[in-house]
Image 1 (tube, helix red, strand yellow):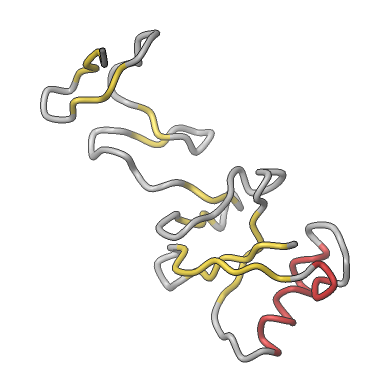
Image 2 (cartoon, one colour; image 1 turned 45 degrees about the horizontal axis):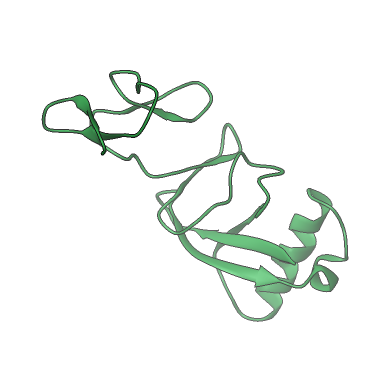
Length: 117
């Protein structure tokens, strides 16, 4: 099965659907994307559709509703977990303070990690 994300005008994923491999010419990504897009259009679904990989084999991670599609890097980016976190060159969100080893949760108000007992 192939998975496709509908991308809105802000490059945000607004819908995810599953398309049969047969409807993607049974091909492998990236060839399967064009065939899948044609199939999606043929059943009356409009919009900008990008294929995503459930196993994260391409486009960094599986695109889900609320994720952003970065056209330049050709990757899906998860939503920013906290306002203080920044996106690195690998398209991962990083906290302002590195997480210590063990079980910790981020405390946005105090900008620190709090141990979970």
